Image (cartoon, rainbow, N blue to C red):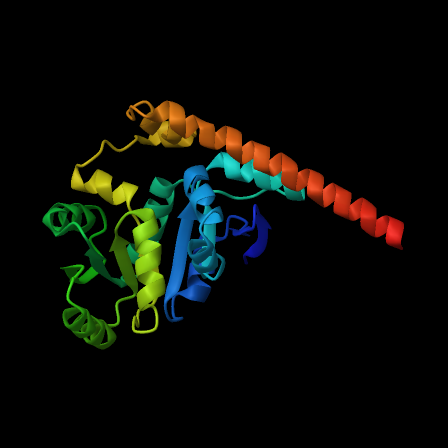
Length: 252
């Protein structure tokens, strides 16, 4: 069972180690958007009204970094379960594989689809692959895609696009999109495509995934500012909540 609270105006769901149970409850619903957020993505969502609305209306919002979990605990005095995007991808794919469910791959990088699907079939042989398609630029072609998806009704619609673009695409097309689990996913699929190096299990278990990628980014110094900004905002939110509680006590 998931519980929801917010930090910095963004809803975060706490699934209390019952991720599979949450999926069981969501799997037969329509257009179930599942979003994972790291610190950088959370700050992007916070500063974009449309993205914030999309994320706050998603079916499941998962913290993908321990810094968010620590901020959540600092604000709410509660432990938050978090799941790095590679762990999340592994868990949801394992669930789909175990249940022998179906998937459809959609995105902007068709040239990588063959490599990605080859690895998925090798690791998760019980997943039924119903097809894949590059995001069509023509509106009439996109309408045909929606008709086809309605007919085949995949259990999971995997969107391989950059974070912001995938959420904007979902929000723009959700009225015509008739799928079940809808999962925007970028970095783990970049790893499957061979575009980036994927962290090994030791790095993931040691919570060093972010450091692993920051070392490979020449602009990493600027990314570290996001953590300073995040904690500054968290401190202000904590202070505002404390002042508000004191004000309410005085008014009673």
